[in-house]
Amino acid sequence: MEIIIKKDALSGSHAAARVVARLVCEKPTAVIGLATGSTPLMLYKQLIHLHKEEGLDFSKVTTFNLDEYIGLPADHEQSYRRFMNENLFSQINIKMGNTHVPDGMAKDVPASCAAYEQAIANAGGIDLQVLGIGSDGHVGFNEPTSSFASRTRIKTLTKQTVADNARFFGGDESKVPHHCITMGIGTIMDARMNILLAFGANKAEAVAATVEGPVASIMPSSILQHHPSAKLFIDEAAATQLKLADYYRWVYDGKPDWQKDA
Ligand code: GLP
Image (cartoon, rainbow, N blue to C red; front, side, top):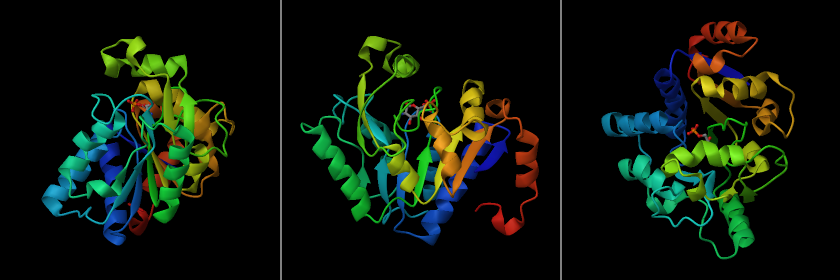
């Protein structure tokens, strides 16, 4: 795992955007896994900026989002499909047909999940997966005790996640769906690279457990310790509980120039 501590969320997001942009430049047909939530918003803004100002070309890129609430139609204010359309897809030159978000209205959920996995495989697998992290260590919507072998499937949110996400539903917990479709931990681990973004003091505990805690399904994100290419972009506030924070800074600052954005 590579831990990249930046002074704030903006510089952390810009550093993460450089990694995504580099991939898209090197492999215009890249397959990118995307996340929702407030955390990746600045990353998406920067990608839009790079597209508009520097011509970063998404015309051949394919995307797969991590998750979606069950029961929310694509045009619902809080659906992740709508979030992605508004915050990224409509502002870059990606082909909408190349963007994929699990179908929260699927009649046959298991079949729809299997089809999602098949679509990822047909696209050649995910080159780079963007991740946020829940306060309980969930990635996508893989709540604590999710199997490390899991694939795209239905999950039930924890009460903590329902409470955390109520802010997007006018603070009303009763409006937050309890079920979702999420890529599995196994799906995420198959991505050739994972980049996890975490900003703010409320993520500090989960970040420390992810990086320095035992690998255990009670902390789903800890599985990234087993990923051959996982980078964490965090800010100072999210780094406060890391025992080896100084070491991670020392490693990053000492990287040879050619490795800096790798
Ligand atoms: C939701 C998403 C996760 C995201 C998490 C954190 O639960 N399914 O993918 O990482 O929220 O959200 P935020 O970035 O707003 O803290």
